[in-house]
Image (cartoon, rainbow, N blue to C red; front, side, top):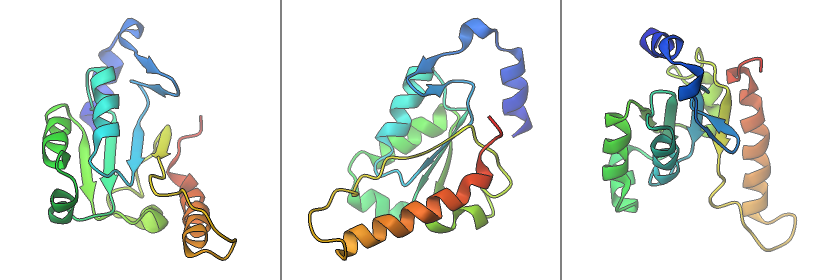
Length: 145
């Protein structure tokens, strides 16, 4: 991880790229990626993925069965310098050995299956509320700014 810091120190401010809320200088954690297309979109916009840690809840072999583009997206992200971690439970990521000591400027969870219709006791809503509270419990992974 020291290599990443050195690369950024050598960059001119002219090389910094912004995409809405995200900057190529930010350390970005992407949680719950499906086919990793969002991570790859960010990496392509920045021209690099060295500042990106992208995670999936699924193990890699399950991911390949679910998403036809997952393998090519993950391979491209790795070529661009991203760190990819599979089998990450977003409700417990503050305890994850590979993440708990890292600090990020942005933590992104796109909530792909958050939509629901039903009553307040609907299982999907309950899961969303639990995940939401656990996700905010990972605030210790964020940097000060």
